Amino acid sequence: MSRKPIIAGNWKMNLLQSDAKALFDGISSFVSNYTATQLPTVIIAPVFTSLNQVHAIPCDCGCGGNKLSIAGQNCHWEKSGAYTGEVSVEMLKDAGCSYVIIGHSERRQYFSETDEMINKKAKAILANGLIPIICCGETLEQRESGVTDTWLASQIRAALKDISSEDVAKSVIAYEPIWAIGTGKSCDAQEANRTIKMIRKTVADVAGQSAADSIRILYGGSVKPATIEEQMSMSDIDGALIGGASLKADSFNEIIEKTMKVAAV
Ligand code: 13P
Image 1 (cartoon, helix red, strand yellow):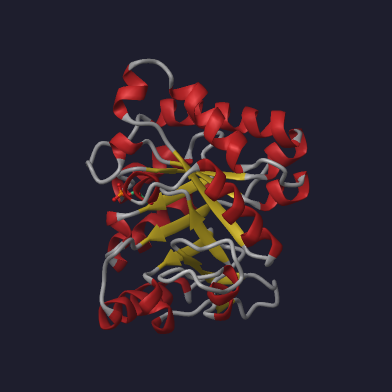
Image 2 (cartoon, rainbow, N blue to C red):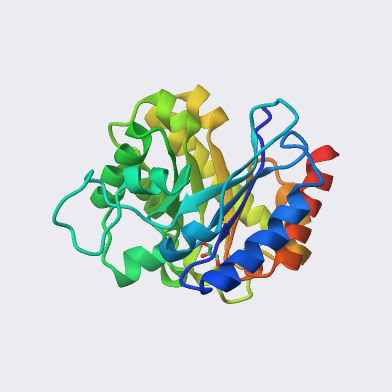
């Protein structure tokens, strides 16, 4: 089963508009050297106030793909209304997004997002024709007490509840162990692969084997140019969701370049 790799940069709450524009320029000039078929699916997720500084880059070779796509970092499930401070999927689409990151551990932890909210967001994203990047991950305490697999399976089951197999197939999951985020300590690649295989098995239980074979599952947590080749050589790791190393064009571009090398092998 060949799944197109994804390299996604989550810029989190960083970069003013001018910095976002400079980073976008650095990435877009790199991806312009390739066709969308040669590249992984490259995604950047700036803060909402910088969405006007970036744009998707359609491929010019006639393949119909994008060299670069844009993601929102969060959304609300309602279309519009009295939800001060929130942004709807339709608004993100209007601003050029085709993906939305949901359920990031930072949102679960600091903004009390629940599995139920994440499920509502996933449904709203898919209903608008965008693709959710659904994050899951365990704490160090959970890992050490041996509950990682049951915890992740319950996050995935809840996020995908009542979503059709077709929609699950086109969705993206990001496995981000919380203890590996921003710590410089990546999860061992073999262990990340084992965990992602378990997540894929959960997807098969919920949505069938065909959806599980199609869904792309990323690893996130201290991904760097030095770690990506080993991570991408694993059977079930379909790409990476990158925080810190996505904030510099040099390191992000190097990660894209190394992903192309591994994928070409
Ligand atoms: P780091 O790559 O900075 O560890 O962040 C990972 C992450 O949370 C991406 O969403």
